[in-house]
Length: 302
Image (cartoon, rainbow, N blue to C red; front, side, top):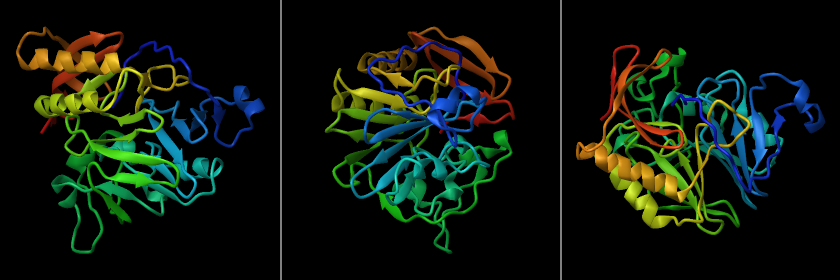
């Protein structure tokens, strides 16, 4: 969800900062591009949305046979698939990290949609075979957004490996922010795409118990050398939201303290999204929000 102002220094990242539809040498002349591409490696691209208030990042993974977008972006008007097509001509699918509006904005532009298969997501399949996600799940009223019903080409089970041809990604079920939150782990290159599971901002905890369990599992899987990329940047959209193993440890430890009543929070609100909440500072600019009430009066959690 929406991020606070913070400073994050990124190391060892090759960046191709190119607004969509603009040649690299013209990039500096363009203001507020809908999408900006950051080349992180020969197979991994971060696609940022610098003009969107939540500073979303989606990730394009390109294998020898297929390509996969992790999240569909927040932008409903501009077509993020056209950005992907400037990078690769491989058959393209999309996998949402979870079913919140700011990760589904461009879903209708994809011809092939993958979805994690859990009891929670399964209940959205209707008699017509399509998936109908209700607004209380995707929260689209905040952006005056409606998520149309969609077809799912492939259901992916937790811990299943997605093979793009020479590039294998393990799907991780990491509930806590939402019930359906997932991450992708590339073991060969030691890269974790975390979605809203972890990112360097304030984290909205839907269920602290689930969150801690998921963080424990994540920390057992990855290692101190793992590169972690989240789904939201800070107020500087030129920097891809990267995190470290130590950051994730610190988040996990703070959540345990919150559960035990040993951490002290402070009231927090945000005029665009949050009417009231408790904010717990972790380190750097990472914080955790609990007891959240949105500006429309709804509580957040499950």
